[in-house]
Image (tube, rainbow, N blue to C red):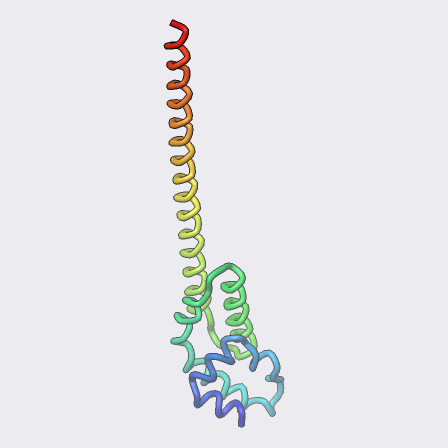
Length: 138
């Protein structure tokens, strides 16, 4: 009964199923679970479009890894092809890594620029005081 309700209500399904909670607690082996497995597969098919929003919510490597593990669980437990979803997850994670590397490089360049500016400023102050000392000696 719960599976039927979940498969009919996409919003609840996405919230629960995205964490893999249903799949991980149900026994999907044996002939008595055929209808449950069919309902879960149908609900998974109906929720496939939600992966973009799930990916969008990932902010770090752990969240991407958790999402990938959930989809791998779905694939192995439900016997569904998840290659498209895994590809989307890996692409988004790669883009996040590229962005973070670019941002780190950018921040390092800014730091180096500020450091050079401070060194130039220190050198000019040192030169100014040196010239003042030189003026006094004359």
